[in-house]
Amino acid sequence: LTEKLDFKKLLWIGRLDEQKNIKLAFELAIAKPDIEIHIFGSKLIDNTEFGVIPQNIIFKGLTFDIPKTILSDNYSAFILTSKYEGLPNILIECGYLGIPIIAPNVGGVSDLINSNTGYLLSEKPKVEEYINIIQNIQSEPELRIKKSNELIKWIEERHTLDCLINDIKNLDYLSFENINSKKLVSIIIPCYNQYEFFFFFFELYYASYFFLFVIFVFAYFLLDMNIIKYQ
Image (cartoon, rainbow, N blue to C red; front, side, top):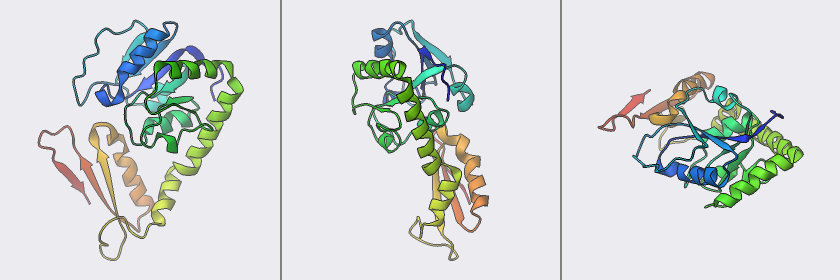
C-alpha cells in the first residue's frame, strides 16, 4: 500500500462519454481548486461537449497499461462519477493496488465497494459527498489503510483467475444446450474497452480444457456491428 499519498491528486480513468459523467469531476475540481484531477481516457460513443474545463483538470490521454498508470503517481484516491455501471474492472484494478476508491452506489459497484472496503456514496452524489470523503481519507490514514486491505482481501477471494475457474467448474451449464456432453460457456467481450481480456479468456480456456468455450466478440468499432465468433 502506498502510504505517501499525494492528497492534491485524484485519479479518474474511463471513457469520456455521457454515462461516465465526467462533468461531475469538473464540478469537484471547481469546488476544490487546491486539488488536481488527472483524467485518462477518450471519447468513444458520443460527442459530449465539455464546455469550460477547470485549470486543475489534467487530461493525460489514453492509457493501455492500467497498473502502470495507477502507480505513475501517488494518487490519494480513484474517483468514479458514472451515472450507471455494471461492475467496472477499473475498480478491481485500482483496489488491488491499494488505491482508495470513492464511488457512487450504482449498478454492481456495491458488490465490491462498501463501508468496509472503500467509500461508497449515494446513487446520485453531490460534489459535497466527494469532498467529505477526500477530507476523510487525509485525516484518517489508519481507516484508509484498513479499507484498502479489506478490499485487496475481497478481490483475492472473489475476483482472481482461480476464483473464476472454480466458479465455472461448479456450473451445471451456462447455456440452453450442451454440446457433445460438455458444458458450454459463452463469454461476451465488448471490444471497444474490453479487448485486453480476449487473450485472458483463451488462457482460461486452456486452464479449464474440459469445457467447450464459445467466445463472442462484439466489435463496436464496426459500422455494421458484425459479430466475430471464435470457437
